Image (cartoon, rainbow, N blue to C red; front, side, top):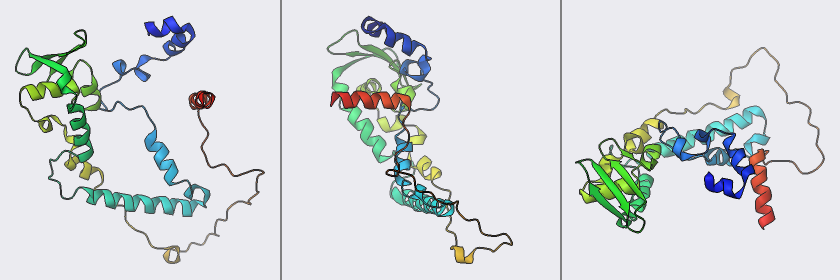
Amino acid sequence: MRSMRLISDEAYLHMMKTSPRFWSKSHFKVTNKCDTLLNNMSEAFNSVILESRTKPLVTMLEEIRTYFMERWAKNRMRFENLPDDAVLPNIRKQVEKTSTYTNSWIVRMSDEHIFEVKHVQDPADMFTVNLKDHICSCRRWELSGLPCVHALSCMKSRNFRFEDFIPEYYRKSRYIAVYKPVIYPVNGSNLWARTQYPNVHPPKFRKMPGRPKKKRNLEQGELDGTDRKLRRT
């Protein structure tokens, strides 16, 4: 923040109007075990239902239900061949990729589970690791639940398996529990119960001028970022 203020007082004051717990990892809560601030999940879902959103209400809901029913079934069968306590494949790849950088760190042991880890080229870049409590002073381990490069360096120095330090929510058993509920199929409208009330008809459609809009409205921050990107190009 001091470096930012040297460049722009306006940017510094703008950031300080918002609590650091919303934009700085040093102040994020570690309860949720997630260090991502992106809305990619919402964007992906919006892209899936893009065509369904233009249809009548019942048709839209039926298409979304069918999509979830098939997606849930596929996810339940996705890792059937893995052992119940196995680490999920994507999580394993992520940890193994982080592990490739451990050669750049020097590990010094303080206790059976407590270590000091220093970078080989920058002595000031030094952290403390507690393997028993799953804590590193860089906070990445606490934020994401996955061992950081400093923790992995300590594990290698003691010949520990990183799989023993992966929490349950990154294993097959928890993944299967998430998708265990079944979304059941339903009969077609020909078999629906008839009521004494008249059918609900859609409102009268009035075609608006111009091309139909399908993209969602962007927030102010996204608009600013888009403008800057366009100016750069």
